[in-house]
Image (cartoon, rainbow, N blue to C red):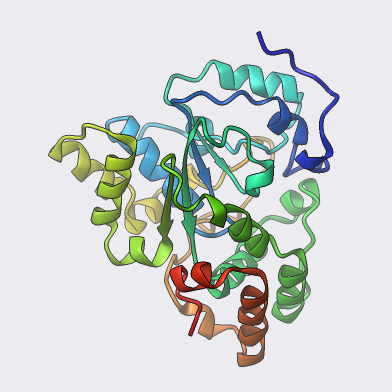
Length: 289
């Protein structure tokens, strides 16, 4: 029997509204668990929906994706980390979680199955800016998320915090591990059916043609945009509206960073990638040009 403890290693990080190290340190992964591990704005919610649809026979009656595919490390209003972990124990198998943690702070590597999605950092940067702008003031205050005064300031903050770089760099050593599947956002946008087939094969699922059609329909941008309210409650706080109505699922396009980003900002983002990532990683991400 695992004993939960407040005495944890510093590697799990510092507590914040979006990161509870005690959940991570005390979480016991099962071989049937599936962890979605991504940098922010790299297709996380899309993958939550795909995996839930695959494992629920295309159910659309859920109120919030967070209730069925929860954000593993986030603090939740009025609940201790012990409460959260006990709630996770009640989930039917396979349990599916999302996390934005680096590999160093992700529990269950080698036990759980892990699906990564990566996206061009320039698109992630722009998408995260709109993400912040579309949050309600109350939610930003509650989650202690600063609001940039301009896109220029946002790029500076995004580069300094470096979440995209730290996440991708930490996971690269696991690229070829048998319990890890690494997908690229641009490939999913170009041919979602082939990539869903890759997920099905990786998870060794037996999916009928009819079921797969439901998955494709319910994980389409059009369906998710039309049901935005099912995806905008990440973190599970029902008292606070986190996003302005209809603003969570935005565009999900590839290469639209040009609309907002200057050549100089693009250069800074790519130079940091070149400095922090292995050449083979840059090549895989198509950032080596």
